[in-house]
View 1 (cartoon, one colour):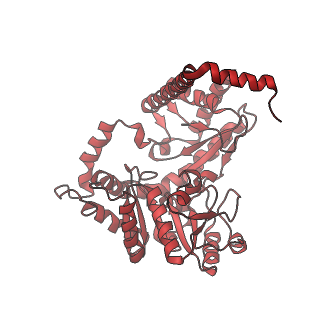
View 2 (view 1 turned 30 degrees about the horizontal axis):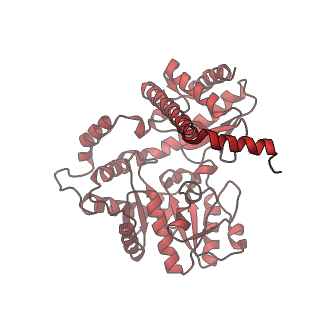
View 3 (view 1 turned 30 degrees about the vertical axis):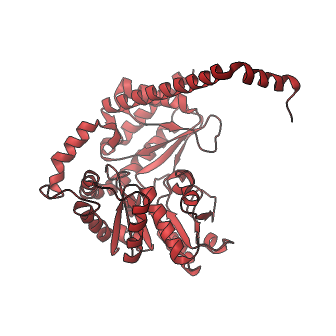
Length: 416
């Protein structure tokens, strides 16, 4: 329906009379909104840092000086600190590549400053080798949701979706996909669907179906490290299903940054060329490499215990919400497939974030971090991601239920 003359005239009057003042007013509103958001972030960060009970101590929660001091103090346990720093990927960076390649059972690996770059390069290289620039992946996979369309804009690739269900595609869906594709990309776990994983037999069948179609398989393994308990197999056996795998160091291993792409030597050598073209041939990266080695040494062996306790925490959360005054809740998946999972509640993010930060400030207990509205906005519905790491191991089921009760009390207060 078109505008009435009054509506159109009103719009015209705003455009004509506001002029620069109108633009300034918009800018001031944007600046005020950003200041409000920054203040909220600072408040949350202060509350998390002061909390005595948390599920996870995120690396970014610590001041820079504290992190750098701890890295310098501990790095000698994983690498000879008398060695020269790396230059354009030699030294400690090359050592990290060798260790990760061995852990994943691949002959070669290349370090990248970001996982986004590593994965785009891998898919671009496979497109050239297969002669098919179409990538089959889930619509909730990282390149589709979090990379601003880079696969098509930067690399000229095209994507197709075997399924829209909130899980990895099945073998049948791969076989039935109407269009040919050169690469199947599988995100393990599928983070935006709730850190979900298929069963081992389902994963094998899906990979086999891709092979039947002469496609290569690339695994987005940003969180591959914590998949081992669910599959009951070590990372190398999981990675052996794929032609290439990328893994991250900061998501689960408390690294500073960086990722590794592992695969056959000829693919990795080509990836190094594209890494340079993409601007990823960084002069020195030894702080990130040291932190990654420490993560492999210290955090990787602990991940199975985090996954196991996440199931205890998730069950206790469900029990706590079931006994509370909330009209509806969801813990997903239940039980969790990794040490991360989602919690859903029928309130707006503003209400839930205020309750969460107040609980942290008033009780020194940070049960939840940030609540968000789902991408497909459903009015009055929010979710948060729960990560159970070393601090979370200290929580008993009873303590989780008690914290839920305190949180819900503040939710109801914030809503009123």
